[in-house]
Image (tube, rainbow, N blue to C red; front, side, top):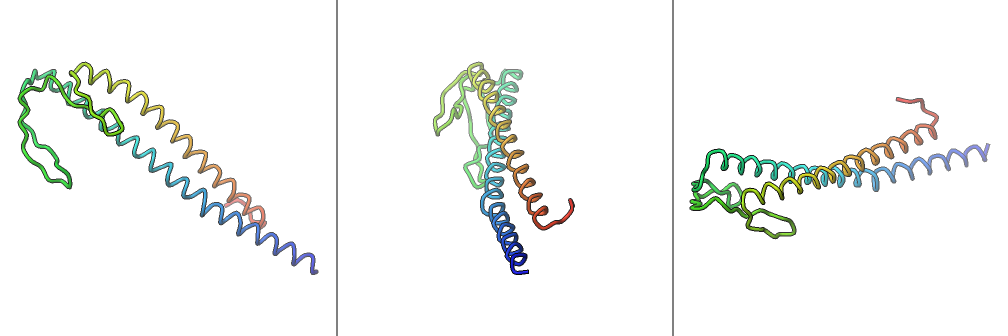
Length: 149
């Protein structure tokens, strides 16, 4: 009888250990992976929007532009762009490059390919973490002699 109680205590300790692993390691890893994927998707959308705007400038042959610029915190001011033939593009790490429309579109094509690959990698990472969580939860159910939910 004493050995059975010891085994139950050991089983309970294992369950607590696995639950702690899920809560302290896997769930935070999952949150970080999803946040990183969301950040990459936002960057992809920004570059896609920029490509659309450049194409609109080309189609409408806009050499001059008057627009509203977001200064931050949703505060806008009017801006007059006397020459739209060259634009500044965020190329990463806080650097911007002055590019022609064609150069910008070429850069965007390359950048979106890289971002697509990174998004795929993060999506796989999210799936791996979710499967690890599921595996640990199934192990906990097995330790507790519970059937599948």
